[in-house]
Image: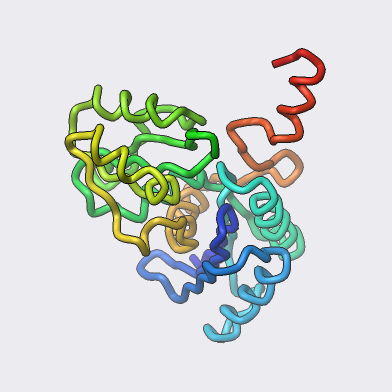
Length: 234
C-alpha cells in the first residue's frame, strides 16, 4: 500500500511516500512558512522523483493538530482535495503522535511538546509497548509546570521533543531529574511518521469522513479568546 502523507502544523512543510516496508521518499523545508504555496509543489516533485502519479497512491495521511491554526487548515484542505479528487481514502493523525513516533527507539516515556505561547504547551505523554505507540494521557494545552508535574509523577526516564522543548529545555533540565532530549532533526513532525501511523489505520479500514473531518486545535484561537473576554464569556 502506498500512502502519501504531509505535515504543515509548524514552520516545516514536509511530505513523504511510505509503504509497508520503507519510506520511499521524504522532503522537508523548515525555513519558510508558506505552506499554501509550497505544499502542492513539494507533492508534485516527490511523485515525479518516484516516477509515480496520484493514481498510484492508495491513501493519504495528514496531521490534524495541534499546531499552527493556519498551517493545519492548509494541510487538511490539501489532503481532502487529493482524497476527493482521486476517490482514495485519507486519515488524519495527531501531530503529537507523529512527533512521538520520531523516537520509537526510546525505552521510556515520550513527551512531545509544541509551543502554545505564554508559557503553555500542547502536550501528550506516550510510550511504545510491544511495538505499538500507546497514549498515557489525554492531549491538552497545559502550562509548563503542569507538564513537569505529570512527568515527575510517572517517575520514569522521559524524552522531550518538539519546538516547545527547544524553548523550555533549560527549565525541563532543571525540574525533571530523568529528562532526556531528542536531537534537533527529530523536533519537527516528519511526514514519514504521519504516513507510517496513517498506513496502519488505512490498512485496518479506518479513514476520515471528508464531510466532518477537521483540525484539532486543543484551544481557541487568539481572536476567539479576545471575543470571549469582551463578551464576558471567559
